Image 1 (cartoon, rainbow, N blue to C red):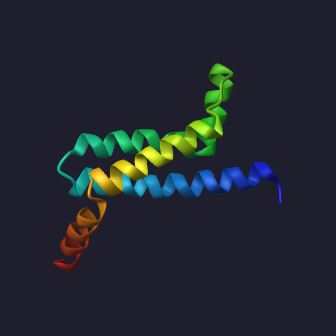
Image 2 (cartoon, one colour):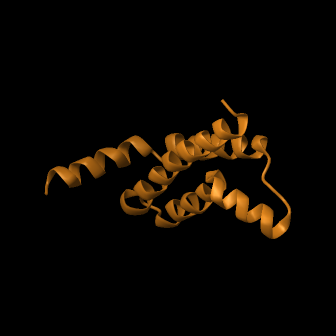
Length: 97
Protein backbone atom coordinates (compact mmCIF):
# COMPACT_ATOMS: atom_id res chain seq x y z
CA UNK A 1 0.00 0.00 0.00
CA UNK A 2 1.23 3.49 -0.84
CA UNK A 3 2.57 5.58 2.08
CA UNK A 4 0.72 8.67 0.82
CA UNK A 5 -2.57 6.75 0.71
CA UNK A 6 -2.11 5.62 4.31
CA UNK A 7 -1.44 9.20 5.47
CA UNK A 8 -4.49 10.45 3.54
CA UNK A 9 -6.71 7.77 5.09
CA UNK A 10 -5.39 8.55 8.57
CA UNK A 11 -5.98 12.25 7.92
CA UNK A 12 -9.60 11.66 6.89
CA UNK A 13 -10.30 9.38 9.86
CA UNK A 14 -8.69 11.64 12.46
CA UNK A 15 -10.23 14.71 10.83
CA UNK A 16 -13.71 13.21 11.10
CA UNK A 17 -13.09 12.27 14.75
CA UNK A 18 -11.90 15.77 15.63
CA UNK A 19 -14.76 17.32 13.65
CA UNK A 20 -17.23 15.27 15.71
CA UNK A 21 -15.53 16.46 18.90
CA UNK A 22 -15.84 20.06 17.72
CA UNK A 23 -19.53 19.67 16.85
CA UNK A 24 -20.29 18.16 20.26
CA UNK A 25 -18.51 21.10 21.90
CA UNK A 26 -20.43 23.62 19.81
CA UNK A 27 -23.88 22.34 20.72
CA UNK A 28 -23.45 20.72 24.14
CA UNK A 29 -20.48 22.51 25.60
CA UNK A 30 -20.29 25.48 27.87
CA UNK A 31 -18.02 27.29 25.39
CA UNK A 32 -19.29 27.35 21.82
CA UNK A 33 -16.18 29.17 20.62
CA UNK A 34 -13.96 26.31 21.79
CA UNK A 35 -15.99 24.00 19.55
CA UNK A 36 -15.68 26.40 16.62
CA UNK A 37 -11.92 26.60 17.25
CA UNK A 38 -11.67 22.79 17.19
CA UNK A 39 -13.67 22.63 13.95
CA UNK A 40 -11.33 25.18 12.37
CA UNK A 41 -8.27 23.19 13.48
CA UNK A 42 -9.84 20.10 11.91
CA UNK A 43 -9.15 21.41 8.44
CA UNK A 44 -5.43 20.64 8.70
CA UNK A 45 -6.19 16.90 8.72
CA UNK A 46 -8.22 16.77 5.51
CA UNK A 47 -6.12 16.08 2.38
CA UNK A 48 -7.99 18.57 0.12
CA UNK A 49 -7.04 21.39 2.51
CA UNK A 50 -3.40 20.33 2.42
CA UNK A 51 -3.42 20.24 -1.39
CA UNK A 52 -5.02 23.71 -1.59
CA UNK A 53 -2.60 25.11 1.00
CA UNK A 54 0.35 23.71 -0.91
CA UNK A 55 -0.91 25.15 -4.22
CA UNK A 56 -1.60 28.59 -2.71
CA UNK A 57 1.49 29.00 -0.57
CA UNK A 58 3.92 26.27 -1.59
CA UNK A 59 3.92 25.21 2.06
CA UNK A 60 2.47 22.06 3.60
CA UNK A 61 1.99 21.31 7.26
CA UNK A 62 4.52 18.71 8.47
CA UNK A 63 3.24 15.44 9.92
CA UNK A 64 4.90 16.08 13.28
CA UNK A 65 2.94 19.36 13.63
CA UNK A 66 -0.30 17.48 12.92
CA UNK A 67 0.58 14.87 15.56
CA UNK A 68 1.35 17.51 18.20
CA UNK A 69 -1.83 19.41 17.29
CA UNK A 70 -3.85 16.17 17.47
CA UNK A 71 -2.48 15.39 20.93
CA UNK A 72 -3.33 18.91 22.08
CA UNK A 73 -6.88 18.62 20.72
CA UNK A 74 -7.42 15.24 22.38
CA UNK A 75 -5.98 16.49 25.67
CA UNK A 76 -8.15 19.61 25.59
CA UNK A 77 -11.31 17.73 24.63
CA UNK A 78 -10.93 14.71 26.90
CA UNK A 79 -9.28 16.29 29.91
CA UNK A 80 -10.19 19.93 30.16
CA UNK A 81 -13.24 19.86 27.90
CA UNK A 82 -15.00 16.97 29.70
CA UNK A 83 -16.00 15.36 26.40
CA UNK A 84 -17.61 12.31 27.98
CA UNK A 85 -19.99 14.46 30.05
CA UNK A 86 -20.98 16.37 26.91
CA UNK A 87 -21.60 13.15 24.99
CA UNK A 88 -23.85 11.99 27.86
CA UNK A 89 -25.80 15.28 27.59
CA UNK A 90 -26.09 14.80 23.83
CA UNK A 91 -27.37 11.24 24.18
CA UNK A 92 -29.87 12.36 26.83
CA UNK A 93 -31.16 15.09 24.53
CA UNK A 94 -31.57 12.62 21.67
CA UNK A 95 -33.34 10.08 23.87
CA UNK A 96 -35.97 12.71 24.76
CA UNK A 97 -37.03 13.02 21.11
